[in-house]
Length: 153
Image (cartoon, rainbow, N blue to C red; front, side, top):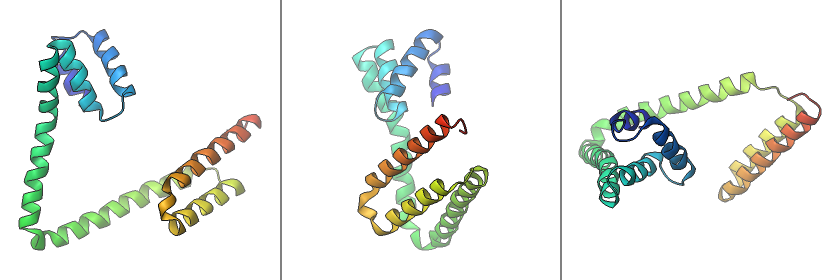
C-alpha cells in the first residue's frame, strides 16, 4: 500500500512530507493503510479527505471479502478438498520457516529450556497466552543481555 499511495499522491505531497506522514502513521495503532489514508486525506483536502480516503481504502477489501464469503458459502461442499489442501500447505510453510529458523539458531541449554517451557505452557495453559508471550520476550531479553555481557551475541 505504501508505494501505491506514495505514487498516487506524489503530485499533492512532496517526498519529505510523505516521509513525515509515513513515520507518524507507523507510530499510530491500527492498520497502516487506514492511518495513511487519514493523514494523507487530511493533508490534501481536510476532513472530507479523511472520509473519502478511508472509504477508498476500506471498500475494495470489504467488497472482496463479502464476495468471497458468498461464493464459499454457496459452493462449500465442492471447495472442501481445496481448503484441506490450503490448510496442509500453510502448515508446510510454517514448518519450513520454523525449520530454517531453528537451523541457523545457536543452541545452548538455556534456549532449549525456554523452548520446552514455552511449548509446555502453550499446550497445558492455553488461556495464558499473554503470559507465554511475556515469558518469551523476557527470557530472550535475558539471554541477549547475558550474551552481550559475555560478548557472544
